[in-house]
Structures are given as C-alpha cells and as structure tokens.
View (tube, rainbow, N blue to C red):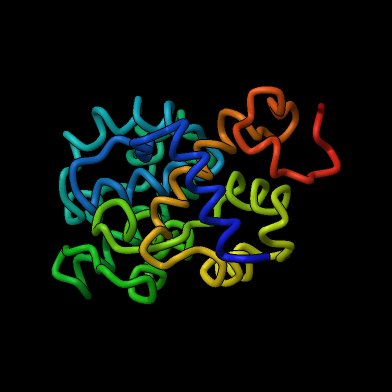
Length: 210
C-alpha cells in the first residue's frame, strides 16, 4: 500500500465533500469532549439533541463534577448506556478540575488519561477542537480502511498506527473526517451503496455489490 493511493482516496472523497465537518455540535474543547463520550454506541443526531440543553445546564467541568450521578444519567438517558456514561462524565470532569484547572488537555496522552476517554475520543478532540493532526479510528474508519485494504489491524490502536504511516501527516484530520462520513453514508456496514461510491473504481473489496 502506498501513500499515493491514500492521496488519491482523499482527492476523490474531497471532490464529493469539499468541506467535511464533524457532525457533533460543540463550541469549545470541553463540549466536544463531553459530546464524544456520549456518542459511544449512539448517533451524533441523538447526542446533539441531548447536548442542546445539557451544555446550557452544565457549561463547565465543575458543574458536572459536583452533580449526582443519577441526575446526570437521567439527563443523558437518550444516548444509551447512560449510567456508565454518567459515571465516566463525572469522573472525567473531577479529574479536569483536580489536575487540569478545568482546562481540557491538548495532547493525546493527557486526554487518554481521563476516565471514559480512549485514543479515538482523544483524537477527535485534538483534530476538531485543537486543530491538530490526528487520526481517529471509530467503527466507520476501521470498516472503510479494511475494505480499501488500507489496514487489516485487529485493534483500533494498531489501525491508527498503520494509517498514520500511509496518510500524509498534514492530512490526518481531513482524512478522518472524510472517511468517517463516507463510512456513515456510503460504505455502510450492512448495505454499502457501492453504485454511488466515488471510490468504486479503486476499491477491490470482495463484498462490492456491483
């Protein structure tokens, strides 16, 4: 696999989506961190419905850190797994208050120390709130990367490392946005829309529908 092919993939996806954007609504790094934690096993649309009022009630880490877990759980219930997410949000915000003076750290290693935050969430925050170059491997990224023969790694962390080698560093975040949107709307898990895919001619996936 070559960097040239990943450049071609980016060019084709960019021609279709010239200005790719993350679909979670946020106005700062803290809001994106919270939204990304809530987005686990949940659609961005549903998360946005919840955070529209949640961020007004809880605009700072301190507000969440001091709240009762059951209260938080009830407010985020539509996102699913709400009890575990509530515990993660509170623990995460308590650490932000205690160790970071409520400021969201801007490095993957520091972010990954926060409860409820793995490398994927950390990279989403870095790439979209801090404008750093980062590759976030979610289920869409992993699926598309496998189908395009960009990565056969079993774990998201290994897939991230492989993709970092293949994609030009100055395009890591752009690549992530493009591929995730492509996986969400075109290269879907159960019913990929191959006939509409701009990558059809360069895709050798054996499961192609045409």
